[in-house]
Image (cartoon, rainbow, N blue to C red):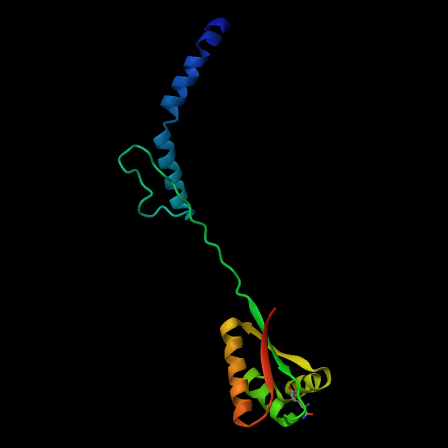
Length: 148
Ligand code: TYC
């Protein structure tokens, strides 16, 4: 074909080439198959060709989120016995006698100290357990939680 003739025929070649060679529905089916083979995306019910000749591909990306963490704190007071605070730290926060003593002394000297860091429900449970235990023994010990 002479160059001039090719240039004149080019628009038609392009139009028919796209229509015949790269069938739109065929391309979508290929994409869907590729995505499902690779485990990519979610081609669940409702994503297929509904008979209209139009395929809709949706992709669901799994997003995970780390939970917010909460510090559980003990507050100092003038009346709760030191041994009782040490016992609380061992019983509810799984501290050794040495760790518990260090934390208790830190609270005694600084007014506040961290017992542990937990997710919301666990922190809330520990606060309730400590407050109930202190109340039962008539000590004014205060235990609180704060978002990190
Ligand atoms: N200050 C208390 C005392 O001298 C001891 C104490 C320590 C109390 C820590 C509470 O969270 C606390 N007996």
